[in-house]
Length: 279
Ligand code: MEV
Image 1: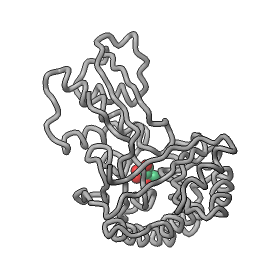
Image 2: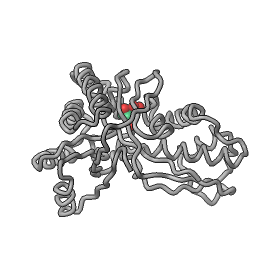
Image 3: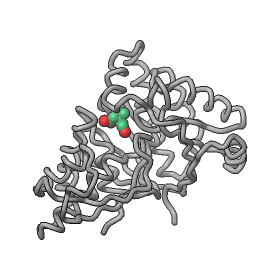
Image 4: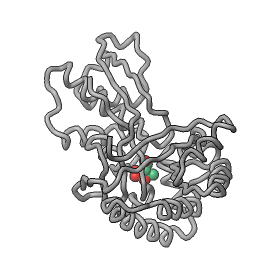
């Protein structure tokens, strides 16, 4: 059984839909899937059903899934589940997946269930792993990070909107072209700085503010972001976001992350520590 890791988008969600480069990385929260034969005993959601189908499995097949990745938090849960299910079904059928490209194409088919027209960034990072630069329609670039990057993921609650709905909201946003352009330029800088091992905190925070202006961050997440900024943190939502209720996870950087951890613990808010690059 292979562990498939979730992901964070470090820079460029939404602007990636408009052809700009975005940076994404695997995180240390994963999912495993195992075919158990009889599907009647297993609760299957629409992603799992589609993944069994695209892998060529019988719709009666059952697949057990164990996941550490919070669902609907912008951490690539659906792409990771699809990938794990496809791999396990193809193993079971005796025709294992032979290449990452093949797996990527099948995961993309599953992503269309929830995303409509996904850019492909979630499927790409889940399948290729590590740190990647992704531009729609171009070859995926695997990057070596210059210096490991420690991050805190802070849960602002599950969005009620789907990724598809958030992408549609952005399409109607005031000042969209200018904001997307600015995020695209920031992402290019983030890419260079990550490879050089330089600090990206300020760029991350700028990206966070641009996403707020774009209208994909709800009130609850906005307020929390501003509180964390008062502590000296850099903050950005990761993934599609959400406005009516939660906005999924915030990515938080600080030169002493313990300051942020203590603040969140006092408020009994859940958070995860993750590291990009290194061991
Ligand atoms: C979702 O993880 C990222 C978005 O940019 C949508 C997409 O790229 O398909 C919001």
